[in-house]
Image (cartoon, rainbow, N blue to C red; front, top):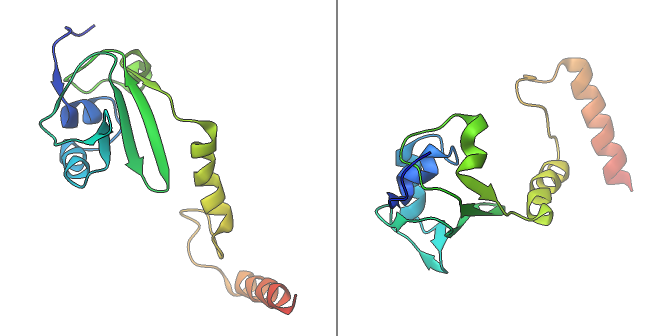
Length: 131
């Protein structure tokens, strides 16, 4: 495992795969979406063991506990050794609610609707509006 030395928050968020790149993690810190001890932090903020990190990814607010600070990116299987997810199920359910509420939701990669699918969609919209 890693030493118990402090690590920059942007580096840590990237290394435990909460963000795809370190620059995205830094930008999120600057936007005020990363909170530690009820304080919005800068990317250079050092974190230590047992700190609670709040990450705002609208519409969900994730909460994580640092088990062990790590500088280098770890594989997805090893992430649970370094960070513990404390996010409530109600918060995670917001993602499902958001997708189910959207009108005209299509699965990613399914492309444009065919002419037949378009007719079905129009009929559903008419039936919905008639109520």
